[in-house]
Amino acid sequence: MKKIANYINGKLIEPKSNSYINNYNPATGQVYSLIPDSNEEDVEIAIESAKNAFPLWSKLKNSERSRWLEKISNGINDRQDELALAESIDNGKPLKLAKKVDIPRACENFKFYATAIQHFASESHHNTDSMINFTLRKPVGVAACISPWNLPLYLFSWKIAPALAAGNTVVAKPSEITPMTAYLLSEICHNIDLPAGVLNIVHGLGSNTGNSIISSDDIDLVSFTGGSSTGAHIAKILAPKFKKMSLELGGKNPNIIFDDCDFDEAIQTSLNSSFANQGQICLCGSRILVQRGIYEKFKNEFVSRTDRMIVGDPMNDKSRLGAIVSKPHYEKILSYIQLAKEEGGSILTGGVPVKLDGDLSNGWYIRPTIIEGLDQQCRTNQEEIFGPVVTIQPFDTEEEAVELANSNNYGLAATIWTSDLSKAHRCSENIKSGIIWVNCWLQRDLRTPFGGMKNSGVGREGGWEALRFFTEPKNVCIKY
Ligand code: NAD
Image (cartoon, rainbow, N blue to C red; front, side, top):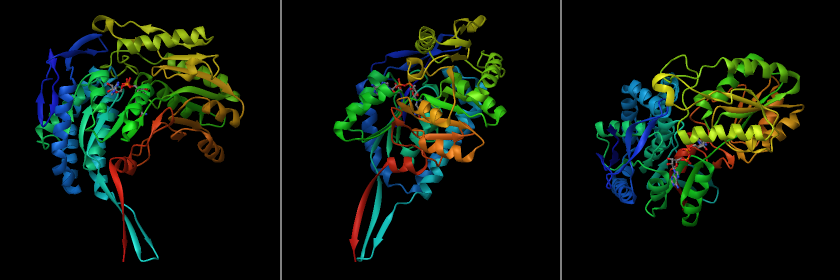
């Protein structure tokens, strides 16, 4: 069985303890590879390597670091079919989604920051008292980058690329649930002879490997994407040490459909924003709010099109949904469907596991599920389920829509469907979330600030925001 290696100080190596964790293929429910169960010692060596590599890497010209990032991007591009297949097997997502979204985006993340760093500039402030202030931006040091399982290489590279571009060295940990493409990334870096210690990838459990990384006094900042409770734990450890942190956390996003919307567009995109990647995208719109004038029409059409979605083999291009990422997550989603029923919700469609044939008979599949009849205060509407489960509820006025949208402790993303531009502007201003999409969903321009409010996190990624996060500003004031 394939054993994944850690990538430390430029070498692909075994964990010190030589112990491994099972890695499952969600489509079959079978173990298909082994992941290093890295401990504190592995983490210490990785951090030491990153510290040693920092002086040289941070002093390279931006154009030189840019060339290394381009090489990584090209390495991903050259192996994109292999990476897409690995991502699909590891995560359970449809192969066509990994080919279309995950791997091209990982490639783009490195390419984007390879160019961004060459255009990054800092501020200067001149005043009339013969004084000029300028901002020196220096790389911070060793960056810890920790990412989740839903968009494995896509989110892993979204942190590593700006961290490296800005001149930091990195100790990174992918999710133990989906480690394979991070391992392949380490092969790519190894093959291009990326200077030793610049990027270190340590595999293992969050509670062990992850915790050792964030608890080390020798890391200088943490970029984390994952659940809000893990984020709170990390903040508790880092805050008393005054370490810089960026926390991209959970969401429970409203998808607001006004009766003056483009109905077909709203339906079509809502199918995606509800169920893409089995609903396991932090940006999915899991609370659908529909204006009463079109509520019944929208509901009937949405249910009927959801009924036609195929849940099946991730390798089959006809499958719109693949497998749920892990058994515990599959059980968690089913338990929320049960909770929704206990809270008085009616299941309009789905709500049941799917049993496939042959090799896939032990895989973890759930029908896309739409629930009606719940108010916004119940747990089903308050807590993040992170699966193919949405609720649908009518509203009457714009004010009510905004109030329902805001009646949640998360504030990551919101989608608004309307043909009234003024209404779109008002709602965008009044909804408390870090990202608003009007008449579209998941359109990403990598230059824009990305992140959430409230329990959805602290800080922003993307564009200059990330390069600012991964550098420390120092003001220099000169009198002349
Ligand atoms: P998680 O918090 O369980 O794990 C995320 C990562 O943190 C993993 O690599 C894990 O090993 C590590 N980790 C866990 N405990 C740790 C600890 N004590 N110390 C250090 N590291 C630790 O989250 P998950 O289940 O992998 O991912 C799903 C969550 O991620 C959802 O809540 C989803 O909304 C969120 N998410 C947010 C965004 C965003 O951009 N805001 C994007 C994707 C996913």
